[in-house]
Amino acid sequence: MADPEGRETWETLLLELVKRYYVPGTAGVSPREGAAGEDAGVAEGGSEITVTNRSCGDSVTVCLGPAGEVRGIVARGCAVCKASAALAQEAVGALPARDVRELCRRMIGLVTGKAREQGGEGQPEGCLPGGRLPGSCLPEGVARAPRLQEDLELLGLLQHAPGRQRCATLSWEALEKALGEVPCPGESVEPR
Image (cartoon, rainbow, N blue to C red; front, top):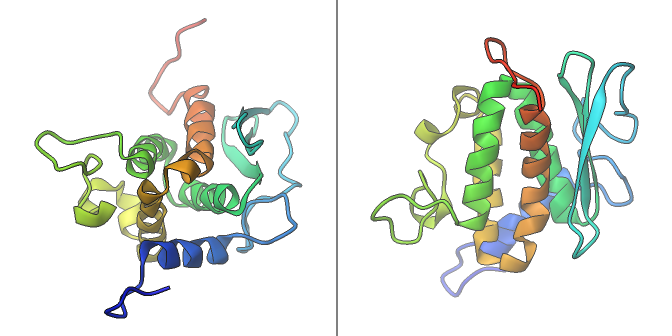
């Protein structure tokens, strides 16, 4: 779908993103090589974190290995949920855990539009007009991966679809929660 001047609309761009990452009929997250799917189970000594959207039934499980490394992200639900989980999986492969944590926060803010910078006109924190993420506000590893950066920016188009935002943020919330359970090198975790 294009506007009267022939430009792509946010719906068209978002549909292209979902097509790149969603494989109908699979429970896994990504059609791309090396992405985790149903076989990304918990390794001996590992754990998993599951976050569920009770309103629609989408769920995302982050499987952690014994050392706290992310072994896979499995999404069950709609195409938007699975595409977002596939992007989260790619980010895990491209960034150290500390940067993934920061990216999770930024992506949740981008998709929901809730993180605002002072004086901004309704734009998520650190975003350019139209909800685009400038390379300088992304962790270094993402800025070096132009396709991943572009796809993360496209996910931000869900600002225009409030009913689908939770579908897109679920994997970032699950990943942030899972990484919060595991300290980064040099961090310590207080006993609960």
